[in-house]
Length: 322
Ligand code: AMP
Ligand code: MG
Image (cartoon, rainbow, N blue to C red; front, side, top):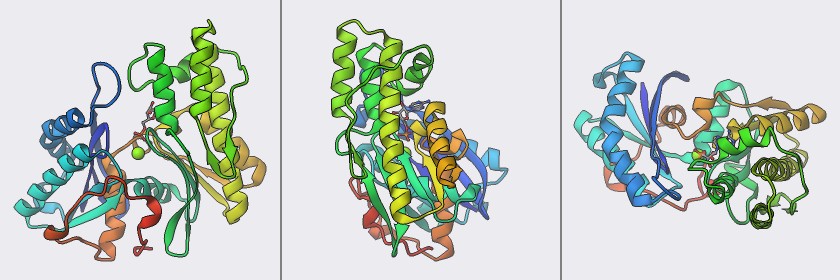
């Protein structure tokens, strides 16, 4: 029985996993009153909600603390105050219960959870707030084949939404708005398998200031940004020769992005996977699931070695559990 704690950014989550099955997955999201995430405030939020979410996860999984074999937590990448809040909580629990800790890399957990729905060796489009990467396994590591050269896709959507007075997170609002909008061309920037969103972001704000409707801005931003992601993903599929594709991260909740990825996969004869929404956004279940993979290979960490790594990249981790 593995319990997983997620705290890399806006969300504190606790999940329970047993033999690859998710038994609990609860979360609480920090919402800034205005503007974007304030890391210190998000950290305080996580500490405040940790104990009650922990208890709720135990209730949902119908277990007690005595049933837990090990605690997994996301040590990287993320906002330092948020990561620290998670690590402190996990350390206290592990000491109290006398159980080992499993350090899980958050981005890799987004990838591994794709396996729980059948993907074996996929290319992952990880489209979240801060992270936008195209990742696949090769020779002992999850390699980053392409990524954003500037802002993450979710942050880009959130910033455009914020300029239109839509509160964080703006992505879901833009999705609804885009349904009523018309497409106008915006700067489209793909460099090999990398993408860049700053030109599109600036142009969208300019067009809005010049009177373009919020619906047309939303539609044009989505069509352009998602087409870039799909083009780069398809190139990674062609390059690696892999036959499976997983869409992950919070922006993967977007029905338009899902439809565009699905269409590309169908045209290439590639199997498309997209986890259910509670496993797409930041969550503790994917941390518990990946933690269990580590536990099977006895990849626990001793308390003195416990640390966070806010900037550690996916391809810095040796994948020793596969
Ligand atoms: P994550 O960082 O993976 O938890 O994802 C959070 C990001 O996903 C935020 O930037 C949200 O705006 C974005 N997001 C969530 N739902 C949607 C949606 N339906 N369409 C577009 N973006 C979304
Ligand atoms: Mg994430």
